[in-house]
Structure formats: C-alpha cells, structure tokens
Image (cartoon, rainbow, N blue to C red; front, side):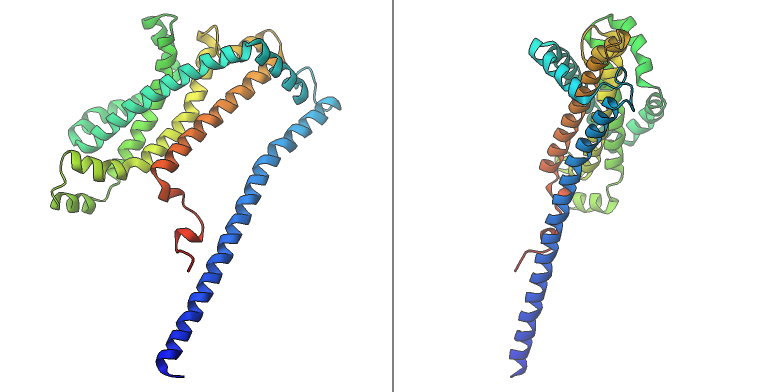
Amino acid sequence: MSTVEAQTHRRTGDDAELGAAIERDYRRERRLRARDVTLAVLTPIVLLLMWELASRGGVLDPRLFTPPSQILVRGWEMVLTGELWAHTVATVGRLLAGLLWGAAFGIVFGLLMGVWRPVRAALGPTFTALYALPKIAILPLLLLIFGLTETPKILSVAISVFFVVQINTLAGIVQIDSRILEAARAYRATGWKLFRHVLLPGALPHIMTGLRVSAGMAVIVITAVEFVASNDGLGYLIWNSWQLFQPEKMFVGLIAVSLIGAVVTGLVILLERMLLPWKHATGPRRKAKKP
C-alpha cells in the first residue's frame, strides 16, 4: 500500500471514529434531555400525591392544607362561574402593561448610559439609590398622586422592571470589548450602524437576562400590590380568601399566580431562543456536523 493510500485510509478511519463519537454524544444528550423532562414532570406530581395523602391521612390539617383534589374541584367551579377568569384577566393586564413599559424604558436608559459617559455619571448614583428602595414602598406615594386607579398598580410593576433591565442593559454595553468597538469604527461603523451591528447584539444576552429576572419580579410585585390596593386580581383573591378563611380559593389563587409566572418566564425564554439561537444550541451538533 502506497503512502498516499495509507494516509487516505487512516483519514477515513479517523472520520469514521469521529462520526461514531458524535453520534454517541448526540444519543447521550437525547437520553439526558428525556430524563430531565421526566423528572420535571414527575416531581410536582409526586409532591401533590404526597400532599393529598398527608392531608387525607391526618398528617396535615385539611382545614389549612386542603387536599389538591378539592382545590382542583374548587378551581374548576371558579372557572365555570367566571370568577377566576375575571381575576386572572385583571392581573395579567396590569402585569403585561407594567412589564412592557418598564422593559422599554429600562433598555433605552441602559443603552444611553452605556453609550454616553456623561449620562451614566449623571444618572448612575441616583438610579443606584432608587434601586435599593423597596418598590412596594413606593405604592403609597403613587396612590397619593394617582388615587385608586390602575396607574399606581401598573407603575409599581414598571418601576420594578425598569431598574433590573436598565442595570443589565448597561452591563451588557460596558462589557463589550473595546477592541471590537475600535474595529467597528475602523470600518466606519458609527451612529446607527454601530448601534445596530455592534452595541445592541453585544448587549442583547444581558438584556434577555434582565427580562427573565424582571418577569418573575413583576409577578411578585403585582400580586403584592393587589393585596392592598385592588378590588380584583389574583392578589386580591388570595388576600380576601385568607381573610375569610377560604383556603381552597386561596390555593387556587396561588396556583394561578405561579402558572402565570411560569408562562411569562417561558415566553421570555422563547423570545431569547429566537433572538439568540446560538446561546441555546446544545449537544455535539453545535460543535460539528455529522459526516
């Protein structure tokens, strides 16, 4: 066998081994994903079954810890009567409005502070001080200014979201390598081109992280606001049910809030996957294609 044939044969063998290794890694990744999904589904089911058995067996006081089966029945009754829908729509409307306004202004101010140093120097200390202030503590002031309207509830959410998104957006701009900016300017990328092709893509992972964190925070804030400043919404449902000692309805409200939080966070993750597909690519096919 000539030297060329030997090298060709060896190269072919190496390619075959590489392909087999990639296929093994790919199958292993699929098994791990299937296991993760199974665990994610079974864990809450097992916990609910334990709760059901403990409550019916007397380990837990059923007057305080209503069995999940009874909670499910009460929740379905509230769906049929429209009571749960009315509270859910009110909460979701305030949540989305506050989330969108807070995220929009947070991104804008974060970009401005990241691009222009004087703006960062002027607003940085003030924003730092305001960020440390509990956002729910601002609600009484907002109620004094706007009264018992929807505005204070939406603004409470928007303010909470604003600071988280602004901080993450600013961090995304600041962390961009200065050599990348110099290279972009060398190719005459200034103004809008620099923003569109360098600054925004570079900061986008941090922006999405801020949105994910603020989505959960927004659900917490709107629920707390509805505790004390609303006559409808899931927060009001939870608080009113506690005052009237109706644990079944209280648990229905808690479950609805948790589901809304999961859906909102899931939508943000879906948006992140659309905007940053390379960040979530996993497995061997991210590194190499199967020969």
